[in-house]
Image: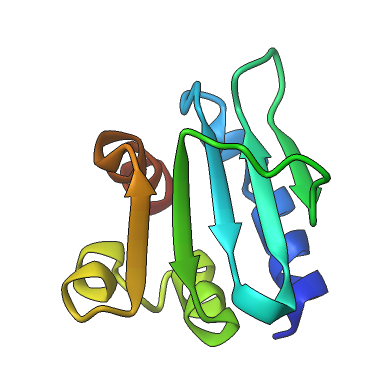
Length: 102
């Protein structure tokens, strides 16, 4: 799964994220960034945003992002193993994790 496919997968899960009420940035290094803005009436997914300010940033490889959004990688395990770094609010990251698990 490449960057565009990950963006499509995140977009397909947007309705699962309506209760997030925060902004989260997936930083996939050189492959790009994906901003999830769930602060409005609808969830907006922006690949490689001009402004990548977010309440929480999740830094991980493209491979691990693919596993995360497809449900093949548990976010807590990824964080514990150092495959996922969280900058900003850990509470927002936990809320995102629980919404993706639904």
